[in-house]
Amino acid sequence: MSISILNVHVYQILRRSKVSHFALQSKKVIVHAGDQSEMIAACIEIKGQLIHNIHPYGQALDCPITDLGEQVLMPGLVDSHVHINEPGRTEWEGFNTATQAAAAGGITTLVDMPLNCIPVTTTKAAFEEKLASVHDKLWVDCGFWGGVIPDNIDELDDLLTAGVLGVKSFLIDSGIEEFPNVAAKDIRAAMPILAKHDVPYLIHAELDCGSFDDVKITDKYNSFLESRPKSWENNAISLMVDMARESKAAGDNCKIHIVHLSSDEALDTIAKAKAEGLRFTAETCPHYLTIASENIPDGKTLFKCCPPIRENKNREQLWQAVTDGRISFIVSDHSPCTPQLKHIDTGDIEKAWGGISALQFGLPLIWTEAKNRDFTLVDLARLMSHETAKFAGLDKIKGQISVGHHADLMVFDDTASFIISTDMIKHKHKITPYVGRKVDGQIMQTFVRGQQVYCNDQFISSPIGRPLLKGQL
Image (cartoon, rainbow, N blue to C red; front, side, top):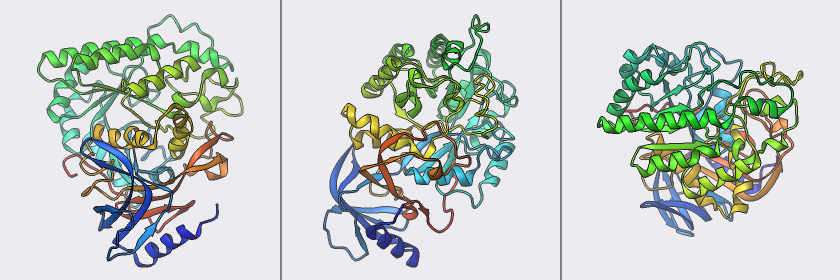
C-alpha cells in the first residue's frame, strides 16, 4: 500500500520528535459523553498518553494539529477474546505477531485467553511465567484471563489477586489436556470466589449430550455441523442460568458470560436470564455473523471452529440479537494454529484444529455487513470497544474517546474497500478463511496511549504495549 501525503506528514512528525502533545482533528470523530457516543466534527488534543481535551473542529492550539479530513477518528477496539498461545506454543502464534495483527486491525487493547499456552494460566506461578514472556513483544496493551479447572479451585484466590481480569472454563473437552472441563460442583465452588473479586466467569458453553457420537465426520462441512448440534449449546447455557440463579440466591450473583455464542435457539434463555436480574451476558464473533454454513465448501478446514458456524437463518437471528442487546458485544475469538494442524491439504475436518484466524480483519468484516443493516460506526464503537472494555473492567481507561482516558485511537477510512489477501496478514501463519473476500472500510492508523504504532501497513518504532493487571489499572 502507498502512504498518503497526509499520513506521511503524521508519521514524520511523530517518529522524528516523539511528540507527546499533539492533536488530531476530523469531521467525523466518535466521542463519548455520559452514557452515549456520537459522531461529531472535533479536534482531539492528546497530552502525554491521555486525551487531554476535546475541542471544536478547527480550534487553534499550541501543539501540532493533523487534519484527517473525512476519515473517521474512532476509539481503538478492545478485543476481549484472543488466543495468543505464548509461552509454550509459540509455533502457533505469539505476543509479537498477535499484537501486530491487532494494531493493524485498529485494536489497541486485547485480553489473552488462558489456554493453548504452556503452562495454562490456572495458577499464580503460571500467570507470572506468562507475564515474563510478554517483555518487549506487545504492540498494543494486553490484559489476561485466568482459567478454572477441577483441580485449581484452592489456588483461584491467589490467581485473581495476581491480576487476571476474570476466568474461563470449558463445559466440554477443550482439546488441551492441561485444561480439562469443569462440572457443576466445580462451578459451585468457584463462583463465590469470583463474586468476591467481582470478575466475570467466561464459559465455553457446549455440553456433550451424547447420541451424536455415531455421526461420521467426513470432508462435508455439514457432517461436522451435525456432530455439534445447537442442543449442546442450548443445554450448556441453561445449566449456566441455573448456576447463576443459585449464585444470586446465595447472595453472590456472580457474573456469567457466554463466549462465542453460535446457537440462535439459546437467545431466549439469555434474554430471560437478563430479565430476572442475573448478571448474564453473551458475545458473538465475526465468523458467526459473516459466514453461513451453506456457503462453506466441503474439505475447507479453515472454517472449522467450535461451536460451529451455522446456517444463514441462524446467522440472521444472531444479527437481530446484536441489534436488540441480547448479545452484548462482538469479539474475534482469534484461535490460530499451524497450517499442519489445520490439515489444509487433506481436508480432514475431523482431525483439524478448530479455530478461526482473523484478528486484524474484524472491523472491516463487521462493517461490511453492519452498514447494510442500519448500524452506524457509533454502534460498532459501542459493540467492539466500549462494551468490551466495560466487560473486562477496563472502561475507566479504555474503550472511548473521553477526556482522561488513554489516547487509544484508530483512523478508519469507512469509504475504502479491499480484498483480503495472504500477503497482508500480520498474524504468524498466513492463513484465514477470509482470503479472497472483499470488505469495506480500512484501518489507516492506530495509536496506543498517544503513540502511533501502525500507519498504512507499516509498524512504527518498537513495541510499546503494556500488561493490564486488575488492581493496577
